Image (cartoon, rainbow, N blue to C red):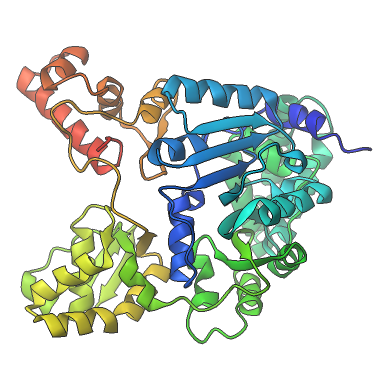
Length: 496
């Protein structure tokens, strides 16, 4: 059968479009920061040109356009239906720095170079000719110091998942998308039931995967397991394909995944990364590509001095003396303990935890640690430099997140709170909204109501007047409103 991209897009994506998601590691700030960590300066994220291939309805690109008013963003997708919706959303938001085009990846109309190219969730799901076109765009349309993000389903992890995919395609033959999904879900239930009496490790693994799929939305189940094309590849083969187009692997966008190849003394970073994929049975990767033949190398701890860090770790309930001596202190970070004994490291992480996930410059974090320990200037500078490798380890372990600058959202609600217009629009029909950190978060009911009213024109009295009245006292309603505003500020939903 001859591949017709427009027909495929209409059949696959317009009939059952993906839910609206943003992808934090595709943000230009993250790409800039990772490139800087690897000792490779990239165009500044606040003033850049961004191209997204496969932009769908703009759920990933529109929040970037709001966040980066000094940048120019272009989204390309074959689906005229979804591009039209993306344009309508941009118009409703008043965003003039983003454009959407219904075009083939192989025939882009924009000849101007881009600083960043994003292609999430496309490479593995299109035929080889389109995969070639993706990398040709990265090579031909990206500036010499630019960075491209290309994600793909990875082997060896997808070797076992192919069993599930083949099983579902066997029991959900070609037909209307929603009918196929319904058949696939019935097949999942039958398969799970047939495995209940089997105590083998294979059965336990398979049932766990079936439970995951059972909770997935229809679009994911359809496009991941029923679509005609889903070709997982080994990292080494992806890197070879990229090299054939004059591109080199810089790192994985997820620093926890990238860590083994970026640690000092890693040897051949690509060979090591592939070996680690085998040991972890990796099933997904998001590669950062740059121009050149060899780009990967160890991360430079000294580069942290020019970057910002944040953490989800919570402040431990210990006295101040425990931070300054050599007693171990444990920080809870996403339900994972981070145990530290070194006084400087404890004070540094405490300083970051005090900022409620707001990025802090390495210099400010180090200054806070030095002040708590009473270090004079020369000793403070020496400690900041000496501890950079240990901080890098925390970053690679996932206890910290990497940023290129300070937060671009409000620390607290002002007199007339202004919530993200994208989140306000999403809150009318979704349980989740996009934050100004470029993440998704579920909205509590009270916060949802306050979010929708926080358009920058209402003070506290007007907000209360717009909220539903109930049996609570006015003081209680006002207190709950303030708590909701605090929650919105803490979760990066208020404009600064």
